[in-house]
Image (cartoon, rainbow, N blue to C red; front, side, top):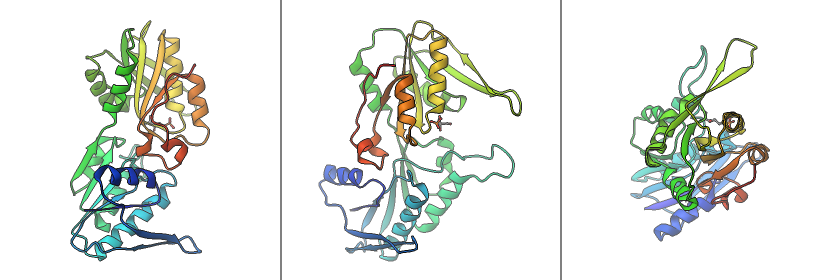
Length: 289
Ligand code: R5P
């Protein structure tokens, strides 16, 4: 077994290798002056089961391309099997044609990963589970929910809980979460645009009055989804609002928006983040709204 890391999240790969009691494989990754990626394995992988750790987080194009080049290097060096470990699977949001003449980048990425030579994929809380079916190779889908549930258990929240999906697309995820929280009730934020050039109208399906609302989402990017949903929950009488998310994408600045709006719990960022400051964060507890 050999584990190699791309440049997206080397501390994570290092942590995985240490956990397994093996050294990270040696690989040279560099850029040519024009930006092209060069990869050379610095040790033999002939006949080995190779694991490549590379979240395709920002900069997504760089990280994805680097992964393709690493897979190709392993394949040409006669690895027995190549498993790609992609905790945050970028390009997964376009998982269908929501409008005409769009691309389905989740499917395209799956095709390219397979074509490059991957034998197996491990992802964590992919945006939509239907994208798992885009691969014709085995996929292991792991979840961050146990970490979040442990955190909530440690907080011993005494109030009534309600689990909230911040959009209709996240209902299955939220329902599964609610089931694990002693079958807590579910509420759903339904966002609708009533016509072109008309602003979005938000409705709440369910009751949050006087309750502690636990919102669950796969990722926080600009934080637009979670903050507008939090405002609606407050308006509908929620006593406190928590936001739980597996992938802390946090496009520049969004962290500040989130912290100013709601109580935030953000977990397992080390699975995702590239930057050490996120990588170090394991949990952020109560932050005053
Ligand atoms: C949407 O379908 C996703 O589950 C997330 O809610 C969304 O991608 C979060 O993005 P943002 O933080 O930019 O609203």
